[in-house]
Image (tube, rainbow, N blue to C red):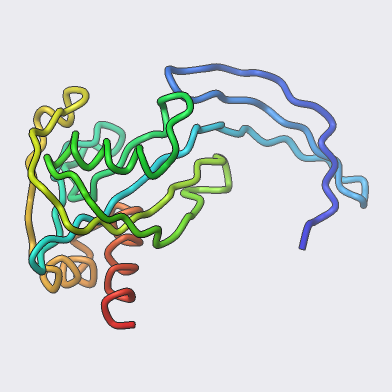
Length: 180
């Protein structure tokens, strides 16, 4: 169901290396106006690599929250013309040194639709072969690859030790896939 909001105008605020911020003005059918700042994001992929009953994660420092987080491999759709499936293969290779021979789309989801249009394509990666990792940026260079039994990763989700949203969604989707 679409609410009756009419876009009155849009103003560019700022741009970064891959995001753009704009201010948008809306008018409701009842005559109320609203102003929202929106972050445009190119989208991303996230991958749940599973090998021999283990999930492969990456522990890396995230400067926005000043914490080390345990995450599934992920990355932006930042190469022109590259589809999400190819990005998923690339990110899995770069971050954890594994090339998936089989990828299954589990979900697509918006990360925080209150202020950004970022959409993540979530894949299950199986039939993995080892390749040389190619870290991109300082965070990935300093990161550690962590292999956990799926049951242990799910315990960490339930106990609140894993706090990254895409990883929570990815591991819970894996659990659902395995119990279906």
